[in-house]
Image 1 (cartoon, one colour):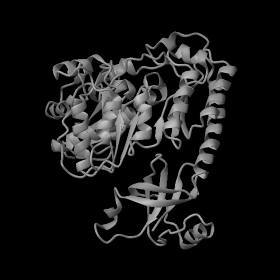
Image 2 (image 1 turned 90 degrees about the vertical axis):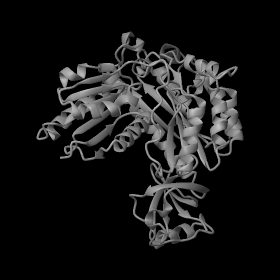
Image 3 (image 1 turned 135 degrees about the vertical axis):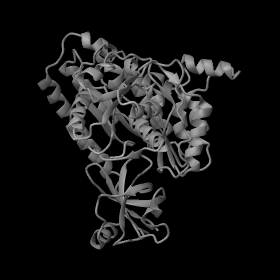
Image 4 (image 1 turned 180 degrees about the vertical axis):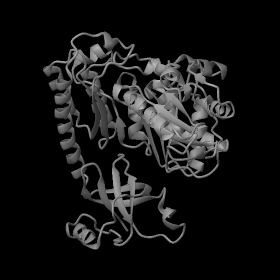
Length: 482
C-alpha cells in the first residue's frame, strides 16, 4: 500500500460536497492518489450535524473504517466539517484511529496537516479555531477541464441563530468572501469548461452584510460592500456562462433586486430553493425565522411575477416542539398554495446547544413520523404532476454524464412520434443514453447519437435541444430535436 493514498466520504449539504472536491484536488496536487475504502492510508469523513441522523452515520462510518483498515497499521482517519467542529478533540478519545479534526475554517489548512501526519505517525492535530476573515483556499490546484456544472463558495457561516439550527455554532459567524475573488474563480471555471455555476452559502441573501464585507470595502476604499444582487449581475455577465444558480437564500433577507434578477438575467435559471420550514406563523416565530406567511407568500408572488415559469423547492421541518395538528395543517395548506416542485422534509431532532433543545412540548417519534409521511405523500403526488405537465415541452439540457438508464428503443421513439410530442426530433435508436439537467434543474435522460470525435465523452458539457416525451417518478425522458 502506498503511504500517500486517500479516500473521502461526504455527508450533508452541497457546500460539504464542494469542500470535499477541493480537498481531493489539493491532495492530488501534493502527490496523493485516491484509493478505495480499506486500501487507503488516509480515510477522510466530511460530516454534517444539521440533523441527528447524519451525525450518527459518522460514528457508524468510523467503525467501518476501523474494520476496513485493521490490517493496515499505518492507516488513520480524518474527520472534517460540522460534527468535527461540534465534537472536536473528543474524537481522539472515542476513535483512536482519528488523528485530525478540522472545521469549516480549518479546511484550507487540512492538506498540509495531512501531509504532516503521514510524516509523523504519532501526531494528532485539531484545526477548530474560527477565523474573523473568510479563509481563502488555493484555487490554482490544476488547470485541466472541470465538470459542466461547478460550485463556488461565496461565504461561510451564519448569523441567524434559528432556534433549531446548529450551523452558527459549527460553521461560525457569517463571513463574506471578497467579490473579486468570487468573480475571478467563476471566470476561471468557465474558461476551463464549466457551463453552469452555482453560488453557495449558508444564507446567500445576506452576502455583503457582515463585518468582514465591511472591512473588505473599507480596505478597498469603496463606499459600501458588494451586495448579493450586485454579485449576481457580475457573475451573470461572464462570457460563456450559460447558466447561473444559487443556494441557499433566507426569505427574511431576499432583496427586491434579487427577485427582479430572475426577470432580467437571461442565464439565471428559473428555479429557486426557498426554505419555508413551517406554514404556521406561531411555529415560525418559535423557530426564530423572522418572517411570517404573509411575507413569504409576498415573496412567492413577486418571484412568479418576475419569472412566471419559475419553479420553487423548499425545506420543511415536521414536528417542531409544540407543533399542533392545526400547525401541521397550516404547513400542508402553505405547500398547496405555493405548489413546490420539490421539498426536502425531515422530522425535528434536538441539536445540542440550540434554543429548541430546551423547549417543552416535544412530540413523540410516532406522531412526527406520521405527519412526515402525510406531507411526503402529498409532495410525491404533486412532484409527479409537475413532471407530467412538462411532457411535450421543448427544452435545453446540459449533459453531465452517461445515464444509468438504458437507451430508448426504436418502438419507444416511434411511440413518442405517434403521440405528437416531438415533431422535428432527430431519432437516434441505438444511441447512448445520457443524463443532464434542464434550466429548472430537473433530471432528464436522453438518447444521443454516437460521436466519433472525442469518443463518448464528446457529448459531455454540451447543451442540446430536447423534447420531453415521458415523465418518470423523479426524472424526465427526452429525445433530441433536430
